[in-house]
Image 1 (cartoon, helix red, strand yellow):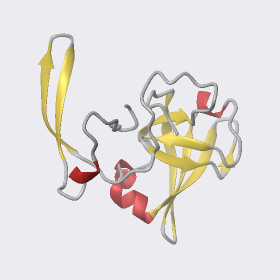
Image 2 (cartoon, rainbow, N blue to C red):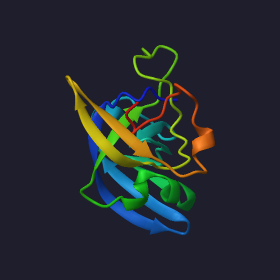
Image 3 (cartoon, one colour):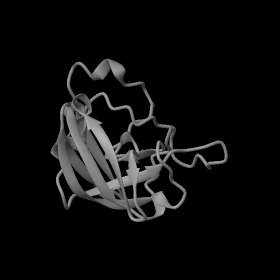
Length: 144
């Protein structure tokens, strides 16, 4: 479970093909300060599990199905990636509760300035529409 509040931007440093997906190595800082093997990190909206870790990077596997339905489909070395540690019992829930289990992506169809903010309109496939809940939470690249 995540809040959709990005803690830092990481950088993809390696993408290695596997039998059914890819293995990503991501350079990071703050999200690794208390991380351990097996912990979940939200990577641009996708919940991934740490399988290897150094002081400044972690490695995670991304299954083929996840690549097909998420923004990680176009992942490449040098790409910036939004990172957030999993929420826990003491976490302030200042964002929205999101899971990092991705069903698909949408496309930006319009961006309009409205005072001090922007209104962004998206289109999505007919298969995804029934999965949305009126006034429910979604993430855009991991941001709630």
